[in-house]
Image (cartoon, rainbow, N blue to C red):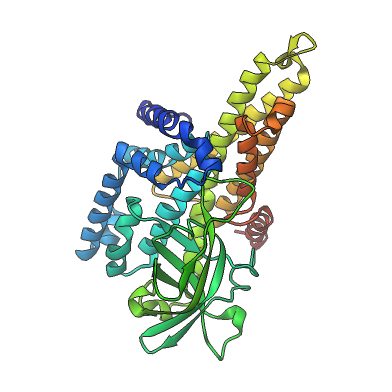
Length: 413
């Protein structure tokens, strides 16, 4: 795939109009007025029928699973063009939202992509039917909780949150931090370690539990103050002797017997999250370039538009190179999806590493083009510069991406 198709451009233009009419007028309130993004996102879902389509796809998937046709359906040939359009339709809103309000993508993606995705990939049929439809349609807000105050990049090894089994029940204890949607989540996938007296703490089985808001002993903090992504509420979670049944253990009893527990499930979730960063970065870079070109034409210094100076031209040219590279990465993602494929974990890590660095570099250069004005919050580039930085931190820091890439290279894969 080398360019957007006519149908994909129509989707892009429609989403862009919605963003400009419904989101842009509310950006200041989203950024500085503590307005949660969920009602606006639900309006977008309703406008484009995204919730209805998500529910319809889910019902079709569940019906096939009940008939035992899951394996047969996955191996059946599919229309590449339809697959590409579906993948593009999921990425275009991310790009367009990130041109103005990247935090909304994080809030949406964690709820619909990570939380619902974890339940769909590892849950029992009953768990899928119980929790996934409302998350996929954004009728309910989801959170995916892995990060802890003392763990950081050592997410599994440093994890202290625990599950103690008592018959067919579990007692959960621990805390999580930097949890997207944490303050408002109706459904939370809580990742912790099974208490195993004969196993070293670092090596204990990882389990995933689905928690509902308001459970006794389960506390969700208010929004934390952050450098950027203000439109994406982030909070802390605290669990003290939270009792849940086997029906809340993602995967049920089978999860207890599964080798490695939920480590591979979490790794797959990280892979999905990393792949989406390229689309986010493309939106940020595209908007920064657009604003910088406009400003370079209009800003007069020494009696000439600053765009006539070679140093400014160099910045604009480098921004365009980054935009082209990011767009090509997005096209590659769509092309792979059209053939029923995904990137390897290392490839997704490489894409995330490049995309995050490109977004930060372009956004900071946009601030430089604007000079003193770029440092003021009334100019969009100031917000985009703050928002871009987290792309180098969440879903694994740049350093963790480098480790994942090098590890596969050195293994000879």
